[in-house]
Length: 305
Ligand code: NAD
Image 1: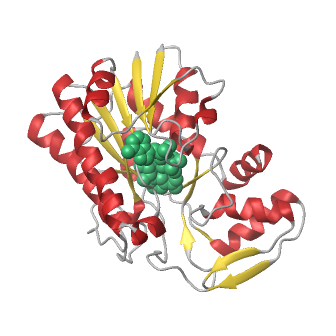
Image 2: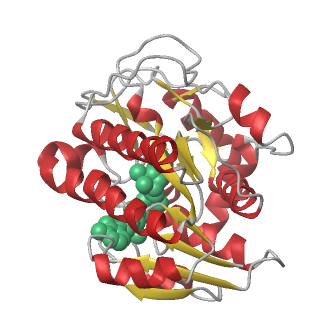
């Protein structure tokens, strides 16, 4: 089996390439990535091939999709603050780029699994977030991911394209970069704690997130590819755990075996207050899926740093 992973040199993409190459059914994995936030060396030792190029390039996409049995579409500008700074750039990659990937898949009738985001729920307050809830994105990023999944679902119903759109929640783990303005909370905290620097919490710290270890996510993605799982509705890819950002600092402190200093800053624009997935639909489609617990995931993340 041959799998194309768009955004395959990024954090989730490179972890997925490694996972796929370990599966006996898979004999070739190609990562298409423009290296805008991904890194070629994330793929070192995985056996996956890197093609440096953009999903906005129809020619390269056509060629690679024609050689694939399945596509996992992860390429995106995956950041709320970057989307606030430049909404059109996020739209180009996340919305238009997705249509380009889907067009190539439609021509070849290739199964596609794509990444949407919990950010589509936005200001919808009820918990847990189940997929039947309305969507109210709070940021251009959230709106562009809603477009991503809406196009995936529309290609399924309009053209019978075998497809699946997952809503990822807060994914963390090895290869997730720290140390820049757009970094996610777990690597930012791990990096600061390991340097003995204070952990900067935006707002009061009681905002909650459903943290999902990257190995849990790639396990489900690989299973979706191998079993050609499809759905005409979006599927949350998280397991309904809800941890506040302050609680995360305590758990990290316990994993490191040292106290950590917490400082509070202003809340961030576009951030949602609470996030917790309903995993009912996920468990129906992936009954064998299990989640790596937060402490274990944090231990593996700290070991990678
Ligand atoms: P990432 O930035 O590490 O990965 C995105 C990859 O896409 C990068 O390697 C980047 O270079 C590549 N890319 C960007 N524009 C491209 C283009 N035009 N052509 C080809 N490649 C391009 O981020 P990630 O966290 O691994 O995110 C992967 C996917 O998961 C994204 O679609 C993101 O929206 C989604 N997601 C992630 C999270 C999370 O917690 N990390 C949560 C929800 C959704």
